[in-house]
Length: 258
Image 1 (cartoon, helix red, strand yellow):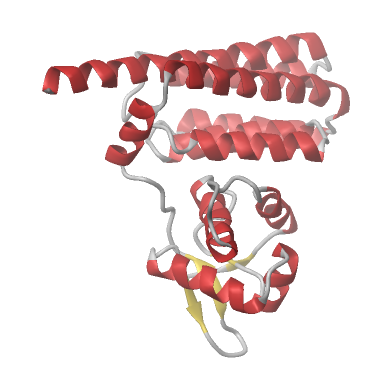
Image 2: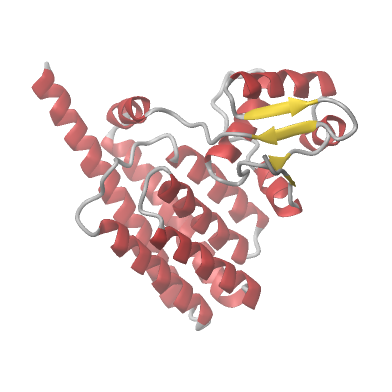
């Protein structure tokens, strides 16, 4: 299968994912979680070739031995494959992620209060990213966001739609030209990918979300920070409402099954 060298931007985003891992993991487990999350979010795509082990270890700030342990874990999960020799290296070969059952369990066990707190964080990140993007984004940023919005609209199948949703929001923070906001957006989207969105959304929700993406892009294109911030916050709040509704529905289903 064709493989492509990892772009500088993808590598930069991978590095910003450090800190998204659960507490209590060893360093090799942290690195494998970091790379796995990047694959799950679509930052690393199937066919992407990782840098050489020595180069990637140096970028991640770990020893080559630690990196090899991390890569071995990813190979065991079928997420990468590694070949040796001058033209060898590790290539992404899967998307990974939790099963629907695992995602549902995680959402069921997450309290309504925690979901609201998560939603508040997401709304704050999205709103500020959009406001800054309206003032700072260059034309390439805006067109990239428009492309991501279009791709999300055209992909209504999970989990591809979920990955594109996350990529749009990470792209929004990149357009804000703030590395700290981008890091915060990545951390948020990494946590969001562990919650179940469902195979089907409420009637028309996917198209509503796509329309909300378009409204954010157009406000940024018009260099209107207030409109961009309001549109991004509204959009983020709608997702929180959806997750809370699913959480309550899963709780009711669990009670009926007891």
